[in-house]
Image (cartoon, rainbow, N blue to C red):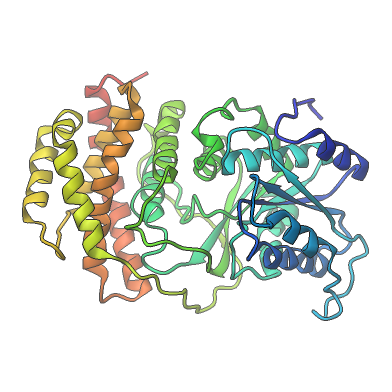
Length: 429
């Protein structure tokens, strides 16, 4: 095994892992102030291991970002609980080992994942999985769904396939999924889903990348993992996980840094993998494992007026900047959207939105103030999501999904426009 530097795990955690020695399976749970939910996730993982992999040695690591609400204590309590008899699950031959640690590095989910990767590397794990710590819908079956394709079918990377409420995951629906699909030609519905399975070989690839001092170490980790696996030749599949119930937020609420880091990572990877995506035309399906059931995700209340207000205010604030970043045709049509928007009504054409994203993707490669660029995109995102909400108000989740599929096809069909703007901005290799 290649000797890689260990920088995200404290020394005492490294010693604890060395004392364990080897493991077949490593499961990671990154956390930050998730005391209410992390115990449920750990119990599900313990039962999943006992039910599906009782003879395999497994380690469960909680990689925490310095929680102050008792998250690590709640994790340790769940590690120590004897839950097998009451759950009608036989005690595993190899009890799962629990480790809780505070990761080192830039605060963010990516640094938490790096600690998990390093633990997997130290243990020589053959298969790994990570689960969000705020999951309320996780079941023991999720452990098998993310690990079995790796252990039994030779896949390198497993993405989740959820049933989600139509307004949950709007960054995924409007940018991450359709743009990644159009660029790299693979239909992976939840590229930033939060729960993934991957091989030990892929872990080594991740650790060798020089990205851990960038926004990947914050919230860009999910899309970076998916894109890296997709482009570098690893077999990819999806597993049907049912409904995802977690701590969701109104898409019109404050996005914090997440939007900038996710979208910025996608744009950054476009330069890294330019030679790959330039040749891709259309897209192909990705296999989905698991038994599909009819499930109903929890509804999410959306404040339409707030999103439209943020769009209009943001447009007025950044109008001069848009005139520089966007093509004249895009700017003209965007100004019409702003002029016609009322308190509760907005019509933001899908083709316009895709062209704006492609303009921003090209501009990002040459922009010195990338933070300002991404900040200026947020009001336009609010406007587009508000328009999507208006369009799909009367739709069920399945009908709304057809609207997302339509958007994906526009991204694919409009890709020649991206190549044109890429060349005009001088981004070509």
